[in-house]
Length: 419
Image: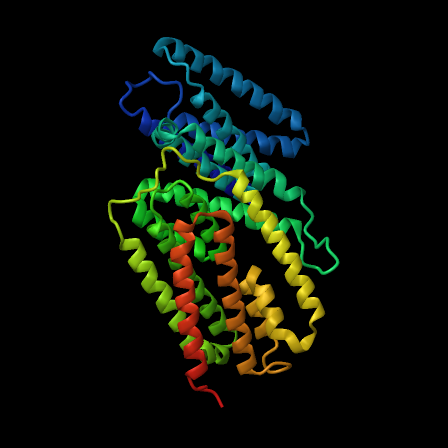
């Protein structure tokens, strides 16, 4: 979009888009009873674009500034008369008009893609008035406070942390550890919302599946924190088992893309483990349909105490694993993979797959991958025990033990399908 005419057309389209939303909202009002409608907003966007073009051609930004101030004065004058007549104290119309003018100028003198995207976002924001107001009426102070804490953790604390290892063994990366902590808090918050909107069983299942696509460990920690205020925890443990099943499917998909021979090698054992986790998940999620619900009205979506405890545990395990992997040498690669897989199974698996065909056979790679999966499951269980109650981690212990036992038996007695 290099021609001035096309950019002016975008400026006009931005005004028409906002005017369409404003005009539809006030469609029942009599003619000439409103300061700005679809035509006025369209002209406002075009005016901003024309003044921006004049400012560029004359090399005088004062033209645009003066025009914007004059436009703001005229719009505010007529909106004030309208507000006095209607006894309305809303300033949304004035701000929308100023935004349309500014976006029209940006479309001509700046990044037109940013102007178009911002216009779409502005239209969506204006159209979601009822939804946002209804949300504010239903939002509790605890939920708002948790959202603000999550925002501070993400937007303020995370960028300040160094993105490098600070220990001699290369395992303690403050930003990665805090990012994982933020992820745990976000999954907990989304799970809280899903349970509140969809009901306990469906909400837990959906949030567990979505969260496990990123990290089953974070899901387990979030569910364990929820279990501290639940009367009975079968569904929460079932959701954690479901997250473990999804995690296995995600890892198998990655292996199949990178090194299918390793997937064939571990497929029987992986299917056995997934079957046990899936069966336990179904039984625990279906148990006690009307009992042991999670009281979402009296609990916080997440608390800083358990999150900080998790961050400390995660940092300690990361450092210990890095120290262990750095001292056992190449002969203990499977042990090193298990140690690193306890913290990040995806990284551990991918690092092993890179060695297949060079310094590692397919069979050895399969053993290393299974060791990483087992270590990750063990870490999830340990963290659940450290941060939750026996009512949550005891069923998870049963599922993990059964899955590990059956997977080990299948791996030992199943013949290798590769030469």
